[in-house]
Image 1 (cartoon, rainbow, N blue to C red):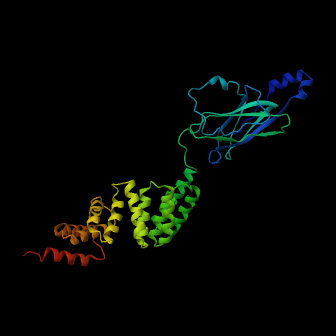
Image 2 (image 1 turned 90 degrees about the vertical axis):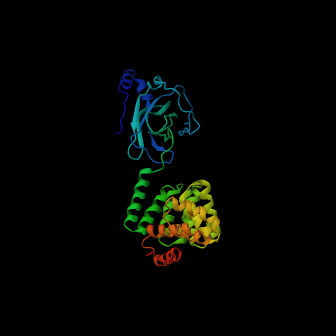
Image 3 (image 1 turned 90 degrees about the horizontal axis):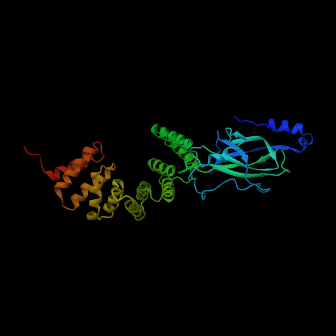
Length: 340
């Protein structure tokens, strides 16, 4: 709630002085308090005190910027002269009434946990009308919270709920909203790529995956997903490049080894594919082809016993595999007829 301040004592003294009453004029200092993203910040107390010097007829910049050092110690005496304040409403707007003009003043915002203290000098000329506008910007005290974080999280939660319900179109619609809220974040693009890939829209998936990896080049998951999409589109060279980038970022990443193993296998580079497929399978890569191609690689390299073990492991992990009959016939050939 906004609070107003009237100089009762000052006016009473002025009244006894007679002619001085007509020479004293007042105005209101009004404005909006926002964060560095331009979002209004409600519930902020904006205080005002007389400045130590007269200042000039023009007000200084209100945004202190990020190059100002944080305080090493507080000087509580400097706030003693605060004579009025106003609290921002839901739109971040505040109003301090009864400010004398002309005059040099200091606007103060303090005791905000997430933000730095603000001291904005203003100089009010006699020519100012009923209101003097001073918009204030709150700089983050530490790491700046993401823009509209709560709204983004709610939107992503809605996307997850739609995905769980099998509504991929609805999920992607919510993710597009989230992407517009935080255009610098790779997360919505990654999930849009994932869902588009799952729905068979490879071109859209590739566009979103490329956007994700360009926004966050250190996102190994983004490069793995892009590699899978490129492979599905029949672009082995591009897919391999993406897989290599994922492995550079995260050398022990199972899914990165998995996609690299698949690409090497399909290029008939079986000795090179084997270590990647082994690493991915041992770490539990969920791609059935990783486990199947591992068994095939053992077979091509004439390693019978590991091939049998890998085929059996494949059937155990994926009992409803569409090629189960074919794998069982291969196992029969490798192990021979059952012993009586």
